[in-house]
Length: 381
Ligand code: PMP
Ligand code: GLN
Image 1 (cartoon, rainbow, N blue to C red):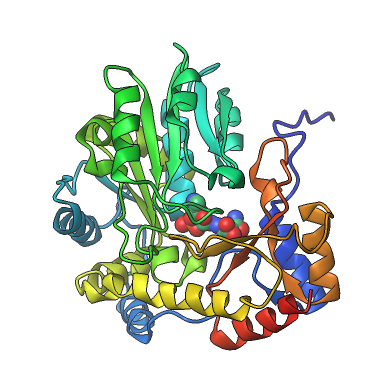
Image 2: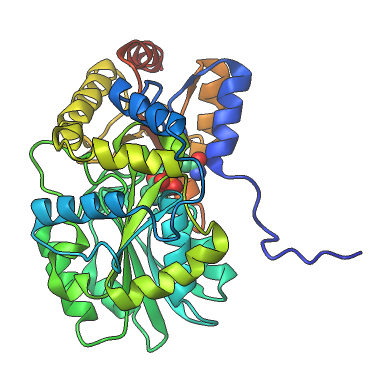
């Protein structure tokens, strides 16, 4: 029997590789993006409560009503934009599923999708599985990963179907500004281009910055799938639960895909989140919590030879290691895991051609002791 692979050049993700190596070496794992601390006990109690109460059968395809309602209310309170909970809010199994469904819903054979690299690793394979073509705009640390909107515009063709944006950004920690949204709106106004806003780090944003969600600009909002993740916001990445906000016509197509992938998402957790989200402090406290983590990590590496711009958002800090070695970033990430017991992610993994800007990504969603130990080791380099 001959199996012709649909993804012949794909292995396991860099996150899987580095986390496994970290475990094998007993290293401090600052690679894959997940907290090493637990969620709020209240949230865990709510899940237990609904599990014991028998909320254990299929949820409705679009998600349970109370959760869709509370999300719509939160978005309206935070950004003054209204989504109808019945027809414009969908609960999915993580932002990963939301992004996959959105891509699959709109991308046809030979459609082009603009990606701003470095970018999250799931986008390009999903585009290709739908027969689409990723078109890259390359952002570099020399330019502080600033987006050259003229460059983005120059990549638009009559085949451009979709542009994917991620703010706050994994891996660089940059965030979009209101001006960025205006420039993007000038590009897509009067076109049939759709947008995905990967906004899983919405609440992990620092130094008083505002989250400029695509939905805050009406030209962008009417063509956007906004994808969120409760895993990121509430320290429960293993729960794989997220949502997508999109205007009715877009939501209809998204749900058609969703119903064939997972159909519906884990029921007791949906009920627990609906209750937990009713207390705004549960998410309004997140920026300061993670800002302290970022500051702690930066304090722990301040005497190192790494150079960096403090992350503006996300739970990642990128550092340049030119002052330490000229090894490529992949080799260095592997060596540091083995030799000093600190695992990171080489940022080349987020580029189509594995551009090596001598940059490593560290996840600072860790307890202070882990950050201190990692800092001590990194300062010796
Ligand atoms: N987008 C980005 C930028 C991410 O960092 C992640 C987290 N792995 C995801 C999407 C997927 O989120 P989830 O775990 O909710 O599927
Ligand atoms: N989003 C996580 C990261 O960037 C990884 C999730 C995964 O392992 N796919 O580290």
